[in-house]
Structures are given as structure tokens and as C-alpha cells.
Image (cartoon, rainbow, N blue to C red; front, side, top):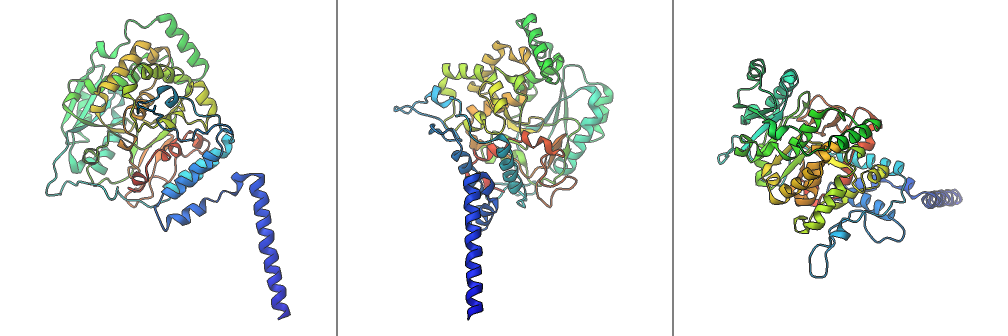
Length: 461
């Protein structure tokens, strides 16, 4: 009995000691006591993702500015009459008290936990396959703005697209170029697909730099970008490409005959079999945009994009969607210096070398008027506004964020980043890995987007 009592006393002492140490550790640095496993355990009995996402969001909310009541995930602010208060809605988020290194650690843990979940296809949603009795093909096409010299790279991409998806569905391809396609290019494409192919010329009046661009201001901008190490600063064709993908391709006469597009780039890799029609998925679930990678951009390339956009919204508040993804656009936790350089824009964007979209969104009044405003500003040439941040900002502002879909089941790589799901349908990539280079983990903006996703859409995988 005495031995049992002593053992019990030792046990009580040990438990008390552990609790004291744990309390001290928590008071010393609450971040170190965060146990993601608690959230994972909850997932077994409820939603697969909502608890870990809510757990993570609470961490961020606990570290907002001491005097501010503004939550991390900023939403639209309305006036008493129900109209949108643009000034308050677009106001920058409060400065975070959390160390960016700590938020990076939390981001990596959150992303890893999500990506380690086994998935197959979207569940609980309409999905159509080629052999379904009522299957009807969607009005869609693959599109690629590509040069003759990139034949081998685009052949590689098409081979993989055909192998994983299009051999079943036979959607057409549209190739765009500001120069005529060579016979060699056309023969090379014919070797890798049996689908219908269109070779289209982008006219100079649409492709070339506008006449109103001030050469001196442009030169000053290029010099600044070069000093900051921003890639392709001096390459005017790159600026033209960014502008054309931002505001032109969807109005090309050939593209006007289609509603949906899937953008392809040379030298990209696809790892997973896709058995359902992704275009039909977009249509049936009322999605306007699908992506796989969500990154931070070079802030120096888009310094004025957000201020210029805010000018537009203050004049046209009616275009701001009441379910806009403002928290994602204004995120300032992980890379606060980047947000500062970009004048309040997080630089978070969907990497547009892979994108599946509804071109009617780009053809809408809101996006069209915004494009006219951006074009008049000249930032495609005075800076280096990319089509990725432009598409992303437009989507985050003018679309309901529920209409934006993370295609987690599509394995994709454009060096140095990848989306490789934990799926038996995927072969050839390291599952769950964002990049082969760990020092690039701070470029992953997907954790911020997880806070924008509803529980319903988090749980489709």
C-alpha cells in the first residue's frame, strides 16, 4: 500500500511538473505551445479541415494590433443603408505583432497538414465523365501564347495533357502568336494531339505597346526594376505578353467563340490522371476561376497596382463584390515588407501559367472598365504588372470568392513550384511538396487563401 501511495505521489508530481512547465512555456511564448495535432485529432470526428483552419485563424487574430478590433480576415464594411463603405473596406490591415518567422512556421505546418490529407476527386459536387449517359461537352478550349522556338517545350506539355486528360475529352487547342506559326511548329503539334487545333495571329494593334506610353517615364521605370532585380524588366515583349494576357486574349476573334479556357505553358509538368471533365465541373458548380498555385509576387513590379485600383473602386464602388477576398489581398503577416512596398497589396496571386477560367468574367463590365483604367495608367510598361496579379486582383474584387476553386487534385509543376496531391492518381512528383527548395516556403500564399475558403469548399476534397 505504501509503495502504491509513493507511486501515486510520484505520478501526481510528474503531472504537476509537466503542467507547470507547459504553463511557463505558454506564457513565455504562446507560439511554441501551439500543437497542430490537436486540430488534426478533431478532424477525425468532424470536418477534415475546418478545425485546423479555425485554429490557425484564431492564432492570427490573437496577434493583431493591440488597439485594433479589425480581424485578420478583413471583410466588406457596409454603411447603415447597406451600401459598401469603400474607404473602410479597402483600409490596410493593422500591423501584425507576430514575428514573420513564426508565421512562416505556422504557414508551413498548416499547409503540410492540409496537403497530407489523402484525396481523389472533388466530392459531394456534380462531376461529369465522358461515359455518362447525359454528358454534354462544354464550350471550352486550351490556349497558349507561344513562340515557334518553344515547340519542344509545348510538345512536352501537350503530351502530358493528352495522357492525363484530353485523350478522353478531345477539347481543341488555340495557339496565339504575334508572329505567323511556322510549318515546322504546326507539324510538331500534329504529332502530339489528334484534337482540333487553331493557329492564330495576334495583330500588332493589340499586341504592341500603346503610343501614349511616355518613353522617359518608361525608361525610368525599367531602370528602377533592374536595380531591384526584377526579371524581364527590359524585355518589352514580356511586358506586351503580360498586358495581352491581362486584357486581350479573351477578346481575340477565335477565343470569342469559347466560354472556358485552360491555359498551357511550355515546359510544365502534369502528374495526375483526371477522369472527370474539369470544364464541366467549372460550369456545373458556377466557378469562374480555377488554380493550383498561390504565390507572392515581386512587390517592386506592382508598386502602384493597388493604389490605382483603389482609385477605380472609389469611383465605382458598385463593382466591388460583397463576398470579395479582401483579407487575402491585404494580408500582411508573412511578408510585411513586401506589402509595404506594394502599398498595401499583399502581392498574393494565383500563378497564371496554370489557370482554368470563365472568359465571360473578363468580358464583364466590371473587369472591362477596370482594364480601361489600368491601361490608361500605363503600369504594364512603367512598372511590370503581370497578368497573374492582375487576374488575381480582379477576381478577388469582382467575383464571389466562392467561385474561385483550388484544383487540389491536379498535379502540376512549373519550376520551382508544384502542386502534388496525396492521391493514388498521381505519379512522378513528391506528394505534398510546395517546392524542391525549402527556402521558397515563404512564397506560398495558399495558407492565407485557406482563411477565405468556406468549410463547404474546404471539404470538397
